[in-house]
Length: 252
Length: 252
Image (cartoon, rainbow over all chains, first blue to last red; front, side, top):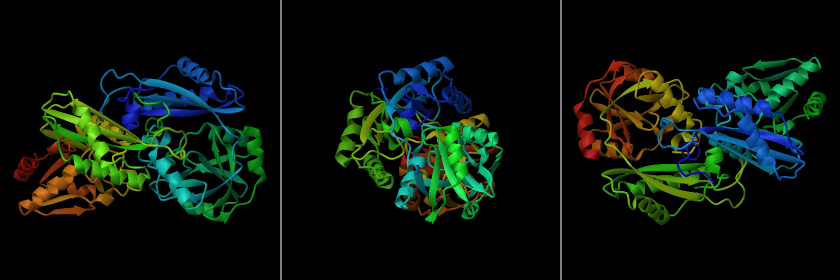
């Protein structure tokens, strides 16, 4: 239980991470905690120590016997009302865990009306103000899809509602640049490293939606889904692609 | 205390209202609750009943002896992780109250880089995903001002970080249209009605930032601050204006 005056609850003032655990072992946990600490600098929050965050994440797993689990680390700005944080407010670190089913194998995406607000530093963080992502996902469902493609305010490709976006064009790999308003995803970096390892460079790009009209293949990445092939975009069927399968294998 | 799996805390999934109370009497409380119920329809949340919300707001005031107080009503989407709400999740209604000082008489504003995301329905609601407003206020402070002027993604005037914006030009009153990405403010409506009562119509407009370079006077409105004169905008001093004082008196 947390107090009713917590700024995470009242105003979405804080950050989170979702970390995959396999048979009790946390994946890329240092990278997740580093990202939370970098986010604290952006939001002017006192960061947790690496050790405290790691202990919290590991503690959440105790007693959970699951092949796959998700650990959620939540850092709120602490107690206090109003737009401006009270002096001396101390961030509150929470951790919880739950069993996770196997990842879904393919998804159909739809481009949704809600834009990613790339004018805000929050567009490059996992913050407790996540409602636009919830609404984007609901818009995708209303369009008959499983997930959303979000554009930013300039109409450039950004991301899915809770995953990074990649596409393959002429044998090359592309993903929206971070200043398109996207999260610096842990799995995004893993995929870029894995691709580089097999001689495929990733182009980080600011590109309009029309770019995807001619793309060979599309996939999503996140810590929980890994590498997930997209089977249709706005009702256009997309083929399986050997590079997606290869990257999924290497990043698993 | 609220459970750690509440979606208001985890994802900013919910709505709030801040209601002024004077000597224990709630101001415009029906309008506030109506707005929360309309917001529930937008977010696909089961709304509270008028009676339950009113009882919660009044209950929060019990034992609080203050000339001016603020009652905060918070409606979260209930418990459950993930972008999509679990079936049968029941919204959670919270109410709290605190004493409030007298309103500040004049504010200096600065135009901030963070834009109001008018592509999102959340831009027209008071939601628990309020971080962009917190960041906008912090940007205004960093610019040496007391508050922010936020533009929308098209560069049009929207609002302050937690207040509606009005200006006076050639004896006429202007305010950003709701589709600029602004809250349908209770005090905004009060001011428009009061102005109409003294023969001044309000033009709801989509207008660029440059509009304010020639404006005679500027003011903010919200339930907590009432009508608040702006004394400077981006370091340009602004004069007091008799219409602002008159509207402040009529809406007090």
